Every structure is written in C-alpha cells, then in structure tokens.
Image 1 (cartoon, helix red, strand yellow):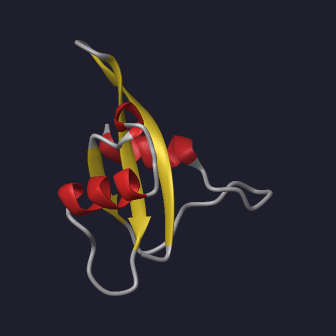
Image 2 (cartoon, rainbow, N blue to C red):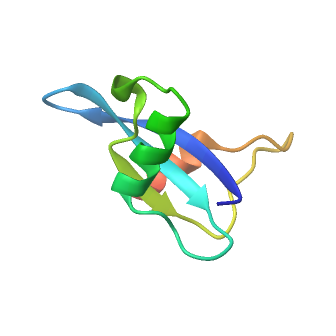
Amino acid sequence: MHDAAVVGLPDPMMGERTCAFLVVRDTAPTLTELKEFLRGRGLAAYKFPDRIETVDTFPRTPVGKISKKELAARLA
C-alpha cells in the first residue's frame, strides 16, 4: 500500500459507515487482510473500515489536501 484515506458515508441503519480508499503499489489487500494488519497495530475493532476502494490517485483540493468530499461522491 502506498497511501490511504478514510471517508465516512451515511448509513440508514448505523448512521455512518467508513470506506478506506487506498492507493496501492502492487495488489490491494482484502478487507480481512487490512483488518488483520490494523489489529496487529493495536487499532480498536470499532475503527476498522467497513469497505475498501482502490484508486490510482487521490483527488485534491486547491490547496493540495485530499478531497474527501470528492471521494465520498464517487460512492454515491
């Protein structure tokens, strides 16, 4: 993996779900592999992403930050 960004998405049942957008160098990890990696790093299970999407590059705002608004719009 090269870079990652997590975006919150509305969910009618849970209120919000998370999607991890990944820029990968070779092959993308599965959701299970990513969760195992995060668990090994000590991240609490409730913070694990619910979904993974891969992208070539992140959309950027005019000041160069990752545009999470544009990433969320890709899933709508």
